[in-house]
Length: 323
Image (cartoon, rainbow, N blue to C red; front, side, top):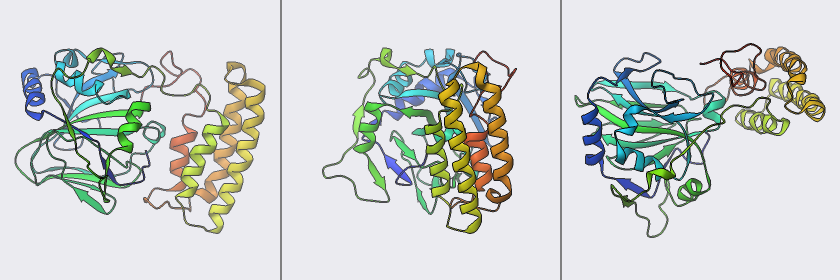
């Protein structure tokens, strides 16, 4: 999700030692290689599709894995965010390893922030976002702008473990963000991060996603995504042509929406309109780069093109193929 600052520290902190003890008690067995195969990167799923730690999908209900059920303080930590949570994992970065520079593209990440709580780390671990870099200390709580280029470098020999929770947020969560400390920037007067100790949060308040992807994306949501993408590009003739193509598409989609809404009877017409749009957009949009280095055409395809209407015959009762 695009944020107004590269980093925002939220006004709470956690007992990293207590969290680390719960994780250590799980042993090595539940840890899995990072799905992208990054060297030195591994993960342990805590909230996963239908609670299946082996399923990296994000279309459907998120439920606790057996490992999260064995970690009461981790459960309390997640509940304390006041957010509706999606996929959530422990992310481990070995010594002398890195998360290479990238942008979190796609519909799922356009709609979600990633909450980081460092559990095991050291002062030399560097988290870069855009032109800024910080060290996230053990027990702190951070979000960052995933729309910017970012990477993580662990130049020490000791591993780094973060709790990483994906979320669209919620009222209480965004109230916390409003009280956060932006980096770079000035902390609000009297700002401090309060300790959320073990036993201070009711884990039964944990809220989990059940709805993640649209059956059919509304024209107003499409307009919002297109506004984000085009707003990140510098003015140029190819951009103006791409925006005109997009505007015609939105008008056509509004007509279909008024006729069909999300009814499956209209899906074929939606798919035809979407493919016509993507075909017409590509010659101009592929020549436009965004400020984060992503190609304009690629951004629109991943945020809108792949999810604006459910694919026919896709696996899963939600109508979407598992990523």
